[in-house]
Image (cartoon, rainbow, N blue to C red):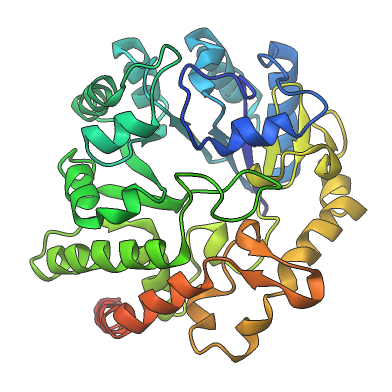
Length: 374
């Protein structure tokens, strides 16, 4: 049995928003070809067939969509894609769909399709109106908070599984409680916070929105206090990072690759069908091949082997860190320095957070273990 997991960029780097910190807009500028356009029906079919072949006769398949903005590919693209999946799933394998979107294009028709195929939908919202509109304007420079939060309400009304993703930059990091409470009030019950990335090749901290390790650490501590208080009251809100750390403390696998300690758990397909090992490395040097190739051969090939090996060379401080079993070195996109002298630029944030919250994480983990059926 195999688990085949792919992240598809059906509209490449095309987007109807102009987020100031967008890592993928920056990443695409570092390729020979900035945008691969819109995925064709034939490339979509090849992608579907390749994933079912990779999963085998008794596996599972996960199709995730991201961008740029994936809804730019159009509602008909997604109707056709899901219909092809149903038609070509001759072994009746379990299939999961998810999409990460800014929400602007969503309407009742979109919501009906997403509900019908049980999509898990991630909507990007950066805290309250002021913070969100400062960093996530549309292509005309107008704020988007009101439109996006209306789409969150629509999805919930249509019973679509929805979570909120918030990018933590230097400004949002200054208001942890305001951000957590604003996002919790949207009512999805599921939140994810990801640290903002500096542009490729630029010194860490060089942008006016850059996130410092100290700022991120204080943000995590501030959010954790409110989150833990909600947990004590029986008003649980899922925060993916905290869930990961509780699961790791319980000896369970985490839900995100950043907490797993090893890269290479999924594939990324650009709109032209080219394949890459990670969303943070959709760059020419890491192109594995194409969806028309033998995926098993690509996954065991030299480029993927080299990519996976990179994540096993941990920053030097990890060897003596008492929190390594919870942190596992973090995401390699945050590492800097030469291979023999790696440092995680956010290490101080995690040290600050675990010094502050580890006892409570372990306490929750111990209670969860006791309540699990034996």
